Length: 334
Image (cartoon, rainbow, N blue to C red; front, side, top):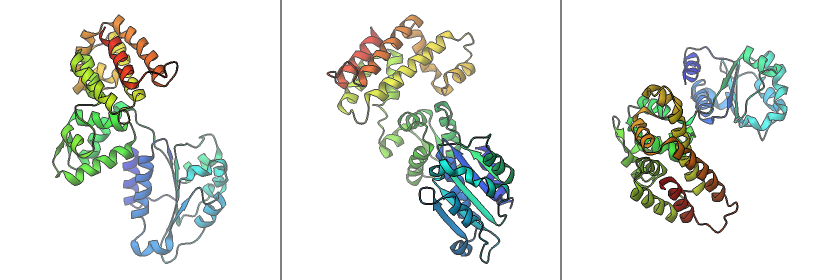
C-alpha cells in the first residue's frame, strides 16, 4: 500500500519513469496503478494520438518495443499500456535491450499478473535501473480485514468487525472482488455510515445468521442446537455452502485452537498475531479454548481430515452433504 502511494505521489510530482513493470499474485494494485497512469499522465486531448493499450495475447515483445520507440505527437509523452503481459512470459526477456536504454518520451506500462520476473535475469535488472518494478503480493487472510478498514476509511466509511469477517469468509483474499462489493455498498449507504452484518446480508446476499462464521462461533460455544440448525441450512443450499469450503474453514478454526493451546505467551496481542485473527474475536477463541481441551482438539482435527477426504468423494460417494455435516458435528460434540 505504501509503495503504491509513493508511485502515485511521484507521478503527481512529475517524477515519471519510462517503464513501470507491475507484477505479482494480487491483481488489484496492478489494475489500480495501470488505471491511474492511463487516466492521469496525458490530458484528454493528448490521449487520442499518444495513448496505446495493447494485450499480451495479441502482440509480440517486438510489437511493444516498436510502439514504445515512436515519438509522441504534439505532446511531451506517449503512454503505452500492455495488459495481460503475462501471456508473453516465454519471450519477455526480449525486452532486455529496450529496458537498457528506453525512450524517455514513452511511459511503458506492463501488467504482468499472477507471475513475477526472475530477479537474477538481466531484463529484470535493466528494468529496475531504468524504471519501476512493482510486486503486488497476495495478502494473507488475517491482513485483509485491516485492508478493508483502510479502503473504507479513505472513503469516509467504517465497518463492524463481524461484517468485515463475513466479506473475508465469503470472498477470501481476492481484493478486486471485495472492492467491487464495497463499492456497491458505498452507492447505497451515505458517507459516514458504519457497514453492519445486516448491510452485508441485505445488499450483497451473505446471510448474517447462516454462514461458516456463525457455524464456527456456535461450535466454539458448544451451542449444538444453533450448529445443527446452520448445518441443516447448509445442506439445503449446497451451492452456496460447498462442503469442501465448510470443512476447510472449520478445520482451520481447530488448527488455530491447537496453536492457542500450545502458546506460552497468551497475551491477547500475541495470541491475535499468532492466530492471525482480529483481536475483537479473541473472546470467542477464549471460550472455545475452555470448551475443547487440547486432546479433544487433536481428535477433532484428525476426524476433520477424514471428512475432508470424504467431501471430495474419496471412498464415500454415497454420503450426502447433510450426512457429512452431521458426521462432522458428531465428532466435534461427542
